[in-house]
Every structure is written in structure tokens, then in C-alpha cells.
Image 1 (cartoon, rainbow, N blue to C red):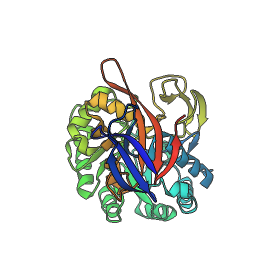
Image 2: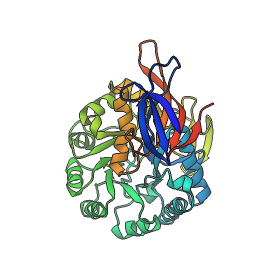
Image 3: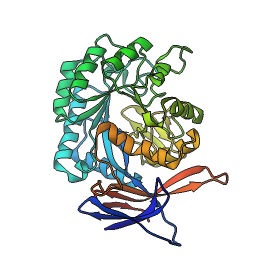
Image 4: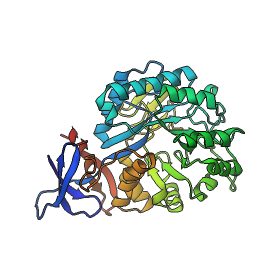
Length: 387
């Protein structure tokens, strides 16, 4: 099998020869008059809460539901993703985790796209603002015994755990989780700067969707945003869908953390992929607007999660933060893959044949505006082809 495109880093036309799911050889294409798509390693999304009307934190979740969410990633150029389960009761969480693990075991479609589970909560702040759309009644302090039972339900596949270090037992809990190989991320927090530092000292390595899941108003300084931005031991995930963070905030965050310490995530909920309209969900009535913004129904300001795919972030971060295409792709593919140590596409012989081929639309001023996925290749198989 061969795929042809412009290398995302060099802009040179290349032919990628693929055999048995891995890259066999990459060679120059030479002169061509045909317009070629860009070709890059497949996107890796560390935060996917659901898709197509199905949330993963659902007591009625089935293996078929998980497979449909996994297949939905193909449309967006995502070749590896972390199914993300958010704050709920122990019963709902354990069911969701067990079902995802069963889907990975039973369905090759799921296992081929699986980068580990992201458990977002339930050990987060119960305060309005920091808890976001997570139900207050299920926000609770870290409990190591409970987490072990949740990890058992997941078959040991929880890879990322987002928690708030504002609780007294958080440092010890973080150290225990880190020793087992779990990446502990700080998020949905009202922690003090001192508690943030204690969490990082204990092993926390990531900030989950930095700038979101926060109070509407903060003390100028110090506060938990500055503290996470300033700590070079933390990698920040960012939702750059054009709705969650203003462009100037994205620019400041990326320049502060540097692109090397930033990864992009979609944070898609079950409303992703749904047409504009009003929907009743487990979190209440929500509305998908024409521009893809997902809000609490009846107004347009307060977000109810994300509904746009990861690829939207590539031209956005280029435009907002002034980074080039190569840097934007790294933040969307190889960097998140390295963070969770999952499979990722590459251009050297023996690399996984996971690729996304796409076009970029530019405005009259030459700024990237829109990314269109032409083709997704997962382990050497074309799993999505645009019309």
C-alpha cells in the first residue's frame, strides 16, 4: 500500500510505502502538478468523553456504544484516543470502566484505537466553577481503596487520572498513583499555589484543560493558574476549539509553557457529532449551536462541554499562538502519544502506519482557518476516506 502527500514538517511531496501495518519506506515523490494533501502522524486525543449522542460515563454503556465512539474518531483523523470517564457514583464509574475494558478485549476496532482510559474525577473540587459540569453530589476527596477498585474494574488500563490536590490526602494519594504508572493530572481544582506545588512534588505531571474548570473570577496573584503555568514539571493540555479559551489566552499559555510542554485535546462530549439543536442529557438540557459551541440550553455564554473534534485545534493554535504547522501537529500527535506512551505514526521504517491526510484552508491574509480530513490510516488500513 502507498499513500502520497506533502510531509507536514518539510512540505515536500512524499510516498509512504506501507506493509503489514508499519512503514516500509518513505521516498520523495518528485515533481507533480496534482494538488496534494498534507500528511502527518495520526492525531492522538487524550480526552474523549463520548461521541454521537453517547457519553462514556453512562450506567447503560455497552460494548457496542464504545465501538461506535471509537469508530467515530476515524472521521477526525484520530488514530489513538483515551476514552474519558467523568465524575459519577462508584457504580456508574465501575460499570463504564469495566465496559470499556471489555470492548478493548473483545473488539479489535477499539483496541486498535485505544491509548488507555482517562478518569476525569471524581476526586475534584465541589465548588461552582472548578467542578464545571461535573455533578456536585459525586465530587469527593481522593480515596485510594476506591481508586484501586476502579482500576481493577478497568483491567488496569486507567492511564490518566485528573484530580484536585486541594484535599489533605492528595499528596500521598498522588505518590501512590504515580508509583503504579498512572499519570496524575491537576484539574477542576480550587487548590492553593502551595497545594499545587505539593502535588507536583508528589508526582503530578499534567494540567488538564488548563484555564477551564476554574472560577469565573480569581485573585490576581497568586492563584492556581499562575502556579501551573510557572511549574516546568507540568505538561498542559489545552482545548483550542475557539470556544473554551480566548485566542490571547491560548497565545499566553503556549508561550509561557512553550509548545514542548503543551498538548491539545478535544474534550468532546457525547454531543460531538450531533446536529445543532437542544438535547436533554444526564447533565440537563444542553444546546449545540450552529458554530459547534455546546452550551447550557437557553443562553449562549455558559459552556456545557466541547463538541468539536481535535483537528479544529490545529489551524486555531497556528493562528492564535503563531506556531507553524509542524509545531501544531506535534502538539496534536507525537507529543500526546509520548506523554501516555502509546502508538503513534511516523515516517521512519518500522514506525506505525498511523496517518492523517488533510487540507488546510487559509484566509486572504494567509492565516490557517479550517482543517479538512481527507483520509485516516490506522495501522496501514484506510479507515476513513472523504467523499
